[in-house]
Length: 271
Image (tube, rainbow, N blue to C red):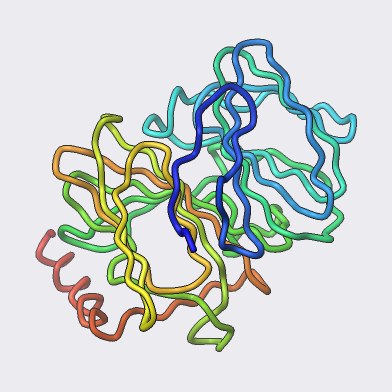
């Protein structure tokens, strides 16, 4: 089974060559100026996260206007568009446009909506050399005006030489309040683009390491996972999850759990 692959950047819609997940799916949409992509969601909900550029969105005949604006993922908060199940939609590029399309099963009947940068919360997780910054785009916390059936979506930026999702954690079964089942995917970009990072996916039955390059994706149906950036480079990843509900709860690798207890002390020391 393959848990890691590259995603093509050819003009048009680029799907996954392999996908071990049962709920989540992802496509990378690349459009040139004036080009239009049309699609239908069927029995899935879709969040279109604009990596770079600007596009005009129409859903079920409703004009949502233009969204986007940042030139790339390393230049500010995103615009995103939520497209519910059983919807026909079109996206027309105004200049070069790149979008990540995250989807999951849904029967939630709601109106489509735009998530502007003003609705994206940001902050910092970790400490010392496992500090990383994040954008929360579509989560269950504090966003009652942004309904979704399953999708949970955000962005993380891992500075030069740092680790993220560390200590490694898993979320592979429903055992609330300690753990909630969610599949997850990480779609990576690297700055400068020729750089790299590393990611690890493991449990008692498997232990895989992969080299992160620009436009690669890690698919996580189960298992502990963590990532890092090579010195001199920043790694970005779009993370998105789907499970039986939208309550998040993770279990850290017991062998690494002690690291979490050092965060308050490290922050107090200014690290």
